[in-house]
Length: 151
Ligand SMILES: CC(C)(COP(=O)(O)OP(=O)(O)OC[C@H]1O[C@@H](n2cnc3c(N)ncnc32)[C@H](O)[C@@H]1OP(=O)(O)O)[C@@H](O)C(=O)NCCC(=O)NCCS
Image: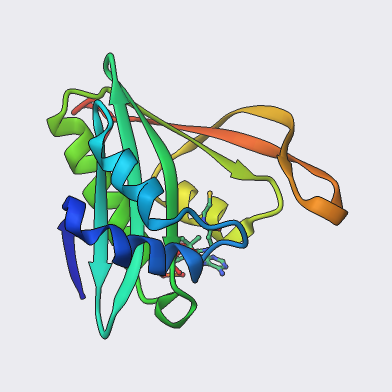
């Protein structure tokens, strides 16, 4: 598995893998625009094909994971963990001291991944996700201290 910082020309592969991970995926233009954004970087995993993607934004010493997804065929092989490690390293290089993310309270796979990485539960955003016919779902806010003494 190759894990590398995403370049603008990776947008089609990022959109392709995002569509394999989410019901409401972001398209190629979304990824192009994101990678153009101030303080935003992406990391792409490639195996037989695009396997996983993470997008992160760093602002004023804080990093936020905007999305992370792994294609169904590549799950439980360490791709999500590797993507998150790469994002953590790049965020620290960019000067971030804290990393935040939001996750659906009903997503045990992602919550377990984040907890194993050291993220702690920091709060709850009520009715944050629109699950369509299934109604609104709460988001758990999680945070990771990126300062050298914390890791
Ligand atoms: C969440 C997601 C990114 C995990 O990616 P992954 O590549 O399968 O995760 P990894 O193989 O790196 O797993 C690392 C650890 O996370 C935990 N984990 C991952 N998937 C899990 C699952 N389905 N159930 C329980 N724990 C899980 C385990 O502790 C795992 O370590 P282990 O395999 O040694 O037990 C992936 O399931 C996914 O893309 N889901 C759909 C999109 C999504 O929900 N994204 C997160 C939005 S906040």
